[in-house]
Amino acid sequence: MSLRFSKIWLHTKCKQRLYSTRPSSFELNDYCILRDRRKGQKYFVGPLQAEGKLFISKGVVNHSDIISRLPRSVIYTHNEAASLTVHFPTLDDYVLNVRRACTPIYPKDAATIVQFLDLERGDKVLEAGTGNGSLTLYLARAIAGSKRIDLPSAEVPQGRIDTFDIREPHSRQAKLNVTGFARGSYRDTVNFHIGKLSETLQTVLSDEIGGDYYDGAVLDMPEPHHELEMVVKYLKNDRFLVCYLPNITQVVDLLRHIKLNNVPLAMDDCVDVQIQEWEVRGTIIRGTSDQTAQANNLATNPAAWVCRPKNFDVKGHTAYLVKLRKVINIDPMS
Image (cartoon, rainbow, N blue to C red; front, side):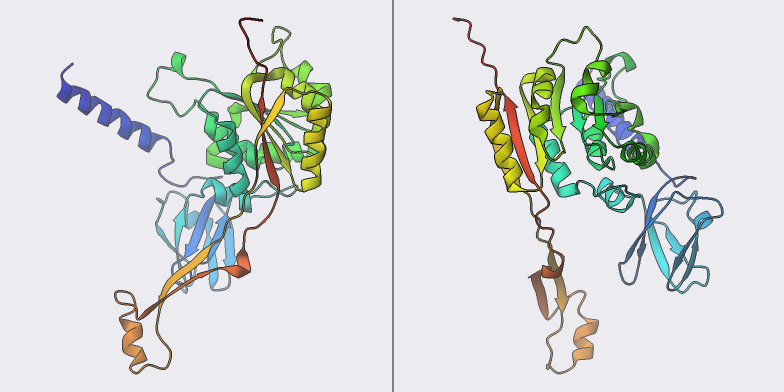
């Protein structure tokens, strides 16, 4: 194969992969984001129905005007008083706005957990505390092999998430939320289970799995130390467990239990993820002459810039993320 032909083949495959992983136009049961073109206000809409309607202050948006349209199409209210652009929701948009049965793990923490677990396609992950399924979706997207259209089906790595919750309503809502995102692209990656982890996990895994099965684990529960022994048994050596703990006293209790009971885990990190949003925009200087002219010229030549934190909307403390590594040393001399 010549170098020129190789480049053409690679470019074609990359284009195919890029455009086949996202839907092209909106269909029934999709979710979408409508953004007011004048004020920037966003509306989360869905699932789209043939007779569905969104009522806003300036009028009514018919779902039928969205269905079959492409992303960034301009949609008008019934009276044409407002125009909006339509977008597919990002994963952040979806988990923050979809129906919930409990408080979700927010995107800033979910992204950090995925980073801490060091996941790749085809990995197997254990999650205890399904909740709304928000973190479940972030984990599934990190490990799902279904997007690998550049490989023959036999070579596609099949990731797996086993997620547990003791509350059936939470698990039921999480299943609906996972199914509703991206037309259910990640539904087959996730196995939902109801029950206490220590009482259910062994019945889920087949008898031939004796241990060292999962590439990562997450515990979102008030007292994770009660489940550590079971999790460590099935966690691969030198891989990571992340505990989501709202209070620092829970962190202390966890580490004390690990030390007193000689659990083969070592803490790599304990972080509190906070995001400070900033407002950055052009403005005019009050008290100067010809303010109208300045305002008209603002888009291309602002007289001044506002650059300040959005103090009213600080995404502050939600939980401590404790990153633990399974540490069973292998000494060939022993």
